[in-house]
Image 1: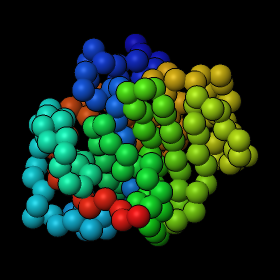
Image 2: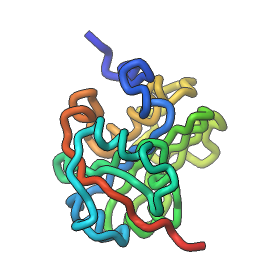
Image 3: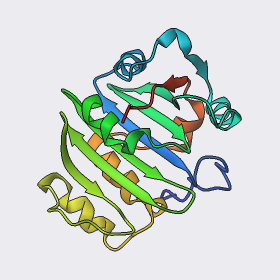
Length: 192
């Protein structure tokens, strides 16, 4: 039996085009269609895809305009999967996207840079950069889980997954990733 804090299944062996460069974002209280609208895109420009199709499409057009992602409903949350993308760590996107709700995201790029965000209604509650540690005070809601995480510094060892699970109630599993159908397409990138 795999321990509750073991996310070693999320590996390049099982998810070769996702595990080393991804962004996972969770937004409470929105449907995938509402999320697409909040991001300034039109649902009629999106298609339903499985995970393999989503990943293939993300890499098929690297020069496409906009930020390509897939979104699926998980309980009362929408779960966004973005292969090799920055949607969930771009504060120009996630701050307004969190209006009136909770947003939790985590990111890893091919260079091993990792980020975690928890935002409530446009306000940053906590961020965690495993390679740098964290400088702000840990909110009471996360003290116990941060103690459990201890000195782990690699997101694949669980920190972002465990923090996300604590804040969303959603445990990411291989089945959730692989069996979900994602509303997939691109939203406009924020203007400078």
